[in-house]
Every structure is written in structure tokens, then in C-alpha cells.
Image: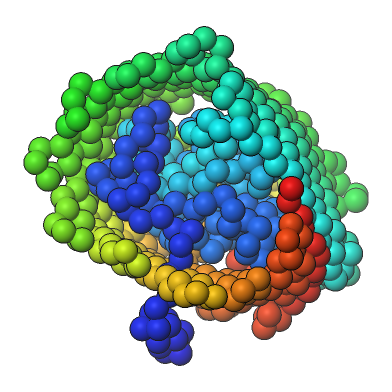
Length: 631
């Protein structure tokens, strides 16, 4: 650990910065449906340019997030097979995932939040908003928000442009990775097509089976001006994933699971823009089909879910110092399942926010009124504020959030005739509530940015799975009395406090660029329960993420690393452990020649044996290489 910290500060003194992370003053972030300067939002926000996908040694969006400041990605498998996304501790359910401002979170389970149905060539940027954001973005934004913004929907340029790009890679264990994109734009319309495919036989697992994956995404988007002030946009995608899921959800020796997930995403937007106001209507339909087979002798779980979401928002500008936003959202969630049963849930919300500038002081109040079939009526207030002093920006915020249990937390393993072990749903769960506070400071200059934030979250009735004896589970008529179970419970209180610290620095010379991003996250969660719950127990206590880039002439060297400390856990039945800590490092080297590029990558350079979650073994060292081209 001392060597890691020492290396960080030595590199900083030699001038290094991550140019793909935008400084506070330069970028407009999406505040639900409006845009505002990052520097006046009062929030701790990281902006990642979409081009980073092809630069780093990664194969999927969840792997890109793994090395993004303040985001803990708990992977169960590689290349987009499955990952839980966590911001500021808590559980994987407490992060709101958006695409072009509309919710992606699946009603089956938050485990599917990492299945983001967009291809790399379509991504303009990713906004990571850390901290309370439920009033503006959606009630589930407990830890924060991740908003993936497509090139079609941001639609800023008006010049004619046409581009095609493709990348093909091969590697050990039968790895075949490819993604491609076609982009065309002129003054009247914009059109994007993309494809992403990750395939491998995989490395050997505990059972002797291989950790295979066949994960594919196909998507397209279109926008056009239909009248002088009106614009129409549409984005559709098909995402299909087939992978080994051995010990993804259990620590039983009999678990040799496979899983197949098919997601269909459709988003249509109608937008009217004048000088001082914007009206937007968004419609989203998302459907998911999940096929999960525990082992060859079991009956597969088949879950079909859907979300229908309709939203209207109005953004107005009254003066250079005051603008406002208000809107209405209605949502319906449905599930048809041979395991969880057939259920639905309706949700509606009125929301509003404003941005007020009084001299140097910036206020951003917001409020959301909610009517939910699961927990009734609620309101969520929020306030963020900031004040700049030359190159220093002080900011802070406070906000409430509320999250109802998903269909897995409520009904998992309900319809099976006999359950010998595993996670058991609880239909009597109440919604969890939280109140979050944060204060922070950012120092920016032409060449670097330093950011620090202190935060505290007070949570009541938090939902998590807890190891529970058979006789203590209320609905146990289909459970084996000798089985081992984790039961979804409301935990009376969980308090999480933490510190975030991020350093970016950049050096540009005549023939060389050198950039460096270093992020630290220190977390501590205290629970009222004597028996710790599973996902609260699993989140990192210390998280250090680094990205280093060296460009010399036509050669790029990119290194990503993550150091994690957490509570160690063991499962003797399958000889599995999650160690107290691990340090993972990856490397990618690229050489550019005109419109072509050749690359070689090594993931898990140290060939460490590690798991993010108990039982889910991650791959050892994995070498690959390939070519890309653009024209």
C-alpha cells in the first residue's frame, strides 16, 4: 500500500493528467432534461468521453466503469457477463442507471443493471453523478447515477460527417472480440449503427467446466428535424448474453449454472426547442427474458419482465441567473415467471428543480412527489449548492431517496416445489429510505484537477439478504428444513460514511503525452443487525483506481489498475474465498498507422486469484491482440 501511494505522488510531481476526464468549468452536464455547467451543479461528477472504450484494456461497459473514479464494479464474470455497480457503498440496487436520461434498471433484479444495451461507437460520454440525486433523476438514486449519453441524442454538431470504424481482437481461451460502428450526420438528420460481440470458451472453473461467454449487442439510432423547432429521435437495441454462471448466486457444490438474457430497448423522443424553453416527451419500452439453469438436473427459471415509461419535461430560462425544470413521469413494471410468479407495479412522479445564481453562490433545489403501488405517497427533497473562489470550488448537498424491493427480493424461489437452499424472497418488505449529506472541494487549473468529498448516508429499513434459519423464515412451506438460506430482510438502520479523493494531471510535449488519473475511496458502514447482511458486507472499505496513458509518436500505452480492501469471506463447501484485498492490473499497447491500428493487451498481468463476490471466480492472466481501422 505504501508503494502505491508513493508511486501516485511521484507521478504527480512529474506532471500527469487524465485528459478524458473533463474539468469542472468546461462541460455541460444533463440535469435530468436540462443542461447546466458542471461547476454550478453542486454535485461531484465525473465525465468520461466515449472514446475511452477503445483506448483501455476493456471489453465491456461495466469494465470501463470498474476503473472510473468512485464506482465499485463487482464482477461475477468477464466481458459483460455480469457485474453489480455500486457508488458510495450500500447495495448494487442503490445506483440508478440511465441511458439518454431514461431508466435502465431492470425490475427483475439489480444484478442486470450492468446490461447496458448500447454499442461503444454510439457513446458520446458517460456522466457519473455521485451522491443524492433522487429528486431530479429518480427515486432509486441512493448512491448516485450513471447516465450513458448517445451521440444521436446529444446532437450538437451540424456539419456533414460520415464515419465507419471496426475493431477485431483475438486471444487466449478462444477469445474473439469485435465491435463496429457506422455514423452519418448532416444538417437535417443523424444516423448511427453499432455492434459489439464478446465470445470465449473461457478459463477452467471449479467444476471443471469453462467460464464461457457469448455476449452480443446490436443497436441503432436516428434523429431528424421534422419542423423548424421540432426534433424526433429514436434508439432501438437488442442485447443477448449467454454465459457460464457457476456460483454467481450460491456457494453450493452442485451449482454449475448457465444463464441467458435477452434485452430489447426502444426509446423515442419528441423535442421542441425555442430560445428560452424546451419541451420533451420520452417513451421507453424495455423487455427482458432471463433463462437460468442451476444444473442439468434442475428445472430452469424463466423470467420475462417489461417496463413501460412515459415522461414529459419542460425546461425554461427566465434569466441568466435563473432557470427551472418540471415534469411528470409514469411507469409500469411487469413480470411473468415460473419461479417468482406474475406481478406488476405502477409508479408515477411529479418532479421539479431550478438553478439559481446569486452573485457567486449557486443553488440547485429539487423535489419529487411520488405515488407508488408498493409504498404509497412520498416526497423527496434535495438541495445542492456551490460557490467558487478563483480556482477553488466549494460544494455540498443533501437529499432523500426511497427504493422499493424488486421482484427478486420479494418473490425469489416462491413457485418451486422444493428449495434446498439459496436466496428467498420476502413479499412483506417495506421500502428503504435514506438521507444523504455531502461537502466537497475542487481545485482546477489549466493542467490538473484535485477533488475531495466527504459524505454520510443514514439509511432506514435497508433491503438486503441475510443468512437465516429455516424456522425464522415466515413462508417456508416449500423449503427444505435442513437447507441453508439467505432471506431478504429490512435492516433497521445502516449508516455509511466515506471520503472520496481524485487527482488528474496532464503533460503534453511535442512528441509525447502522459496522463494519469488516481482515485481513492474510503468507506465504513455500520449496521444495527448483529448478523451482517451479504451485500453490505461485500462492498469495498478501501478502493483505489488508477489509469495511466503514455503516447509517444504513434504508440499508446494504457494501464488500468484497481486496489480493493473489503471484509474477507470463505465458503468451505466449494473452497472459495474473497481475500481481504487484491490489486488487479491490466495493460494495452496500440500502434497507429494511418487509418489502421494494431494492439496487444494483457488483463490481470499479475495472474492473481481473486473474486469480487464469494464463489464467482474471475479469470487469471489473459492475453489478446488485434487490429482496428477507421475511415
